Image (cartoon, rainbow, N blue to C red; front, side):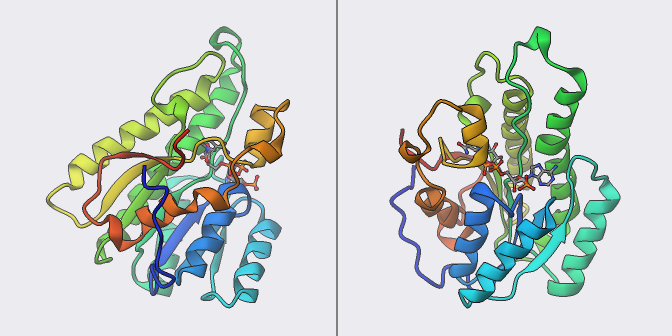
Length: 249
Ligand code: NDP
């Protein structure tokens, strides 16, 4: 737990950081926070007007000019990730950070009742797309002096819980993907890779999962940003293959 981390205001100066699901919730706040600390952010998401709104907010706040890449991860193929990598290479020549944040909650129902195609869709967005995007971006991350990959996990990614179905399984898979990649890169690459569990955070996904909860009682995305900054910035150099939590509770 590094939630008390205090980031210098220029922590991410000159860094190029790609964020998936950057139009809403935690991803939106992460994009704005990274930009406020000097990063040029590449905003990936499926709803273009939401990405444009984040772009405008960053410009208005005086941050470095972002880039927008609309993409629906539920239908994305390897060619889509490769053309995104090509565009990032042309524009920036490298990638310093990759935050896998986009996620689907899917159904909350017993395994015996879980719809097969709904299951596949959650696995596609939460796992397969993260794999494909990582694969396509690895050469660009190798161009960075110290690339950082963050996969977004969950408390149900390390402990299975009734009715959390594909979402929980997808987060277990995310932990596995992180561990395998970290092990492969150790000693041969300067890229570090970790998982981050944001913990209960006030977003529309949380409100869908816990409809009876008072949102005001839930931690805001802004409050969990110290850990996101720590893992993206050079202060976490050398940390790899680990699971982090953004909140103590
Ligand atoms: P939100 O639902 O608020 O935001 C998710 C973002 O992902 C949205 O911007 C959404 O786009 C985007 N997204 C979803 N599906 C796709 C897709 N097919 N293609 C492209 N983008 C997509 O979720 P949170 O901010 O709460 O969650 C962010 C991450 O944190 C997720 O990985 C989640 O599992 C994890 N998490 C969240 C917790 C919480 O309490 N909030 C707790 C533990 C983990 P659009 O805006 O267009 O819908």
